[in-house]
Image (cartoon, rainbow, N blue to C red; front, side, top):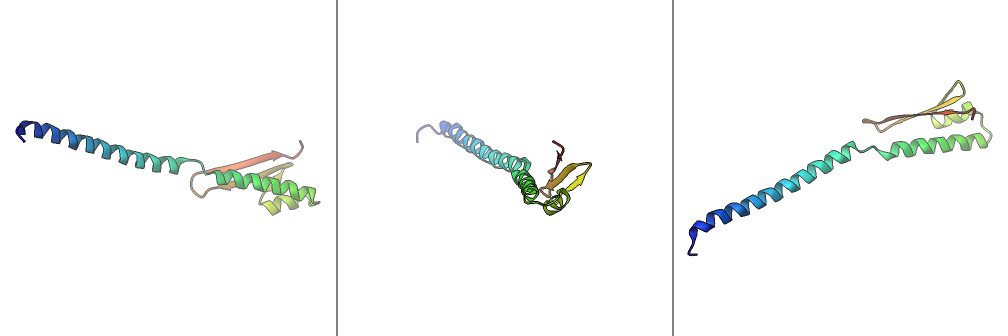
Length: 101
């Protein structure tokens, strides 16, 4: 190599591009982990929907409202069914269904 002065800027450019690439990869991993931890868990809503469908199934099968609510883990007060579910971390969901309608 004849021009040794050009070696230093080229080396710095290569290190800079490598550092930028490494920073981008790390930031993608960190943000991906953050998004996965903060995304609502759809299983909670699926479980509530399943419980509600089971409740109506038991009603149509001939059980009373109180018996059907007890079977799905719900409570009936003032002719309203209350179903609760959570994911064990951050989400707590309550369905309140008016049984008069």
